[in-house]
Image (cartoon, rainbow, N blue to C red):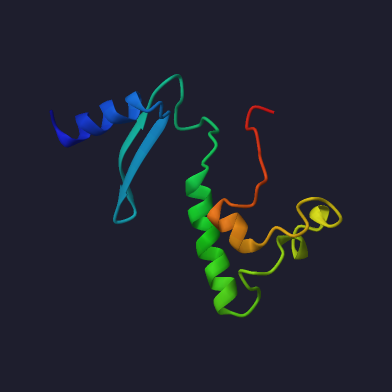
Length: 104
């Protein structure tokens, strides 16, 4: 079995819906399963967290925020709620205690 075929089988096994490989800025492989396609909206979860952590790192490097800072300094809707003391570090580590159900 080729590497790409093995990757395809693995992604099907774990319930993925899509997979893409980009090399040197060019889309090399795009795979879709379970009724999805290139125009299907799909939650990105850890991909989003990775991008957010890079942006937070840049902001911290520019002294625009600290990791120990309450996220409610930026997410004003959290002020006066149980989430008020959640820090940026908590969000990056997924240790905030907050729960979100994507099906809601």
